[in-house]
Length: 127
Image 1 (cartoon, rainbow, N blue to C red):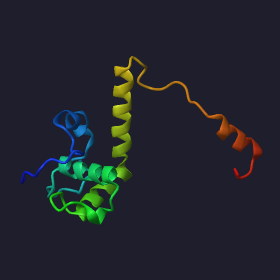
Image 2 (cartoon, rainbow, N blue to C red):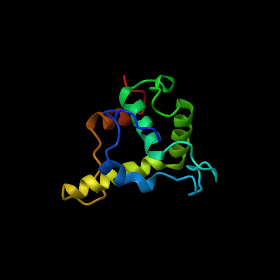
Image 3 (cartoon, rainbow, N blue to C red):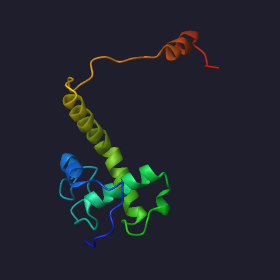
Image 4 (cartoon, rainbow, N blue to C red):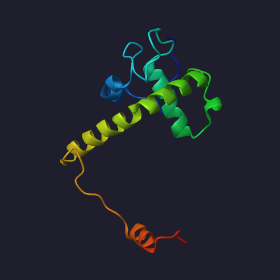
């Protein structure tokens, strides 16, 4: 793999270590993998590209040329989204933060703000 200049959005080694095992490999099967063929692009580099797109707020086709091609990145994104990879990453990181803050890993209370309740009581569209 060619080395490129690091983007501020790239995962650090510590960040990658926390989620690496949640990202499907080409041999793991399932929706998130690409069958039995070896991957052309590194999983971490694909995830770096996805994070770049979300942080920069640009369209797929405006992805920098030193990242994998946008078509490949979007293909992985769609497969991982459909397979629930991003939900699992979010769940793991949420639990980690809650434990670090001395809370139970799973929240036990939900809060509904009063505006939501008022709108629901009327039974119609909120104005």
